[in-house]
Length: 316
Image 1 (tube, rainbow, N blue to C red):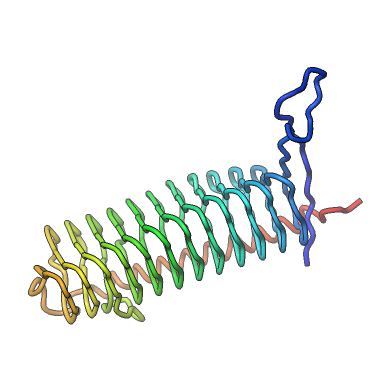
Image 2: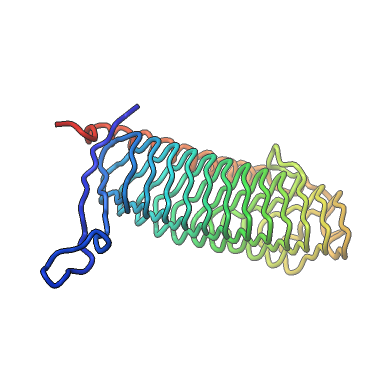
């Protein structure tokens, strides 16, 4: 186990008549730069700008904030407040529980593995939000970033607008799914979407179910599915759709085949073969996902090294 240097700063919140703060008036902030394990942080935790903090088996009793260019690695941890990651900051949360909201503000990105985010996840102009085997209790939203949800669960809505790529694989979304304006498009595979699903104004590739992206199994859509004004190759193949399937303004027209649609379907006959999808487009989408994984690995390794070099927690 690695141990970390933690500096505790008391920030006085309100002074009494004699110029002293009572315990109830003092907001405790812990500034982290280094490694530690088996620690309870009594209040908020801040990773200062450019610093790296690695925590194993810790409880943070307030918010966790990663300032600009900082790095926070959490494993077997609990954050009782919010997790906030600021410009070019990075957070990796593994086997960790975040009770509050998770917010990415122009962050490099957040990687979440087998973790629980009880509040909303909101990513604004960030590099990526990559979730593997994690559970989300609130809405997951992204604007102008990238979103990867794999082998997970979203208890409310999943909405992306202007993402480079949105990829949903082996995931349950208990309410609606909306993917719009994605430059590389969106891929939804082997997933269950319990509400309505809409795909609007996406480019390059849109694949729902079987198609040129390998290992993409059928989806179950509990509501309506609509494809509108998409400008890249698209396919809806082999899915179960309990509502209506509608297509409008897509160019080229989507490939639609072998779906079980219980409602109305005005997409049949739009195209005849999934072979119409470009394998070059497939390679671009698959390669991008691999690139993001590589970026996560490199940033994690560099953060671990920097945190270890920062020193042990309680060294004399």
